[in-house]
Image (cartoon, rainbow, N blue to C red; front, top):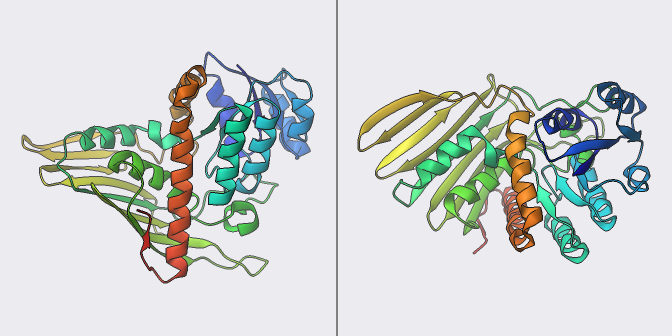
Length: 334
């Protein structure tokens, strides 16, 4: 498959490296409005065609897949353009900034017959595999808890708005739309389907040059028929840390960065896991994700799966924002 990367910042650069581990795909082109970023792409691989816009790249007609790696505000227009031009599309999270935008993208995928596939890479992470295995033997209802602590937001590419994650006009939201998207789709995978209720409170970060701010801390709870998931997120912590846990009546599993602690009927076991804090771009998870993308391409009957996951994630995030705007009022999704 011939791939074009749309957006060559931190994510796009990491993706180019990740594709070198994917035998079924070749990156043939890169689009980025920055001349410096285009030059960087060409320096990394002289065979690449580079252009300031995706439109120019697609005119050649030699692209099968577009991988959208630009900041969130550009996801929908780039994905729509790619699918309308006949390209299957991988899209970084959040796929759409809200439910309405996400619904338009899924509808475009249906109408064009081109797959829209979310880059929900934490599905293929080592910690998710440990949690998914635990979910097969824990008694329900069980409680999940995800804690993501950061000392600051992830920086963008130097020379182009390195603090865009705090700019609502580019990011669409703060840590809830960013890290929260990962937590939401992980929770729906572990607990099954859409939660019945969503409750959320947020705390704003410092205002930017335009006087606006985005949320930098989040406390949310998703209530499912089979249990609940508590989510704590912050860009304003004294330490960087990731903690994921599942607790049921017959045992529990805790992942605390690279430490795994499992308790069940046979006692307490400890192990190690490669720390999810090692790399913010997680290139090592991508080959498995792309293999799943390729499997979906070969079996169009599977396409409703990623469509539904993309839509449900957007609906839960939107409900969380609505709850936060109403001082933590529970939002029913059942």
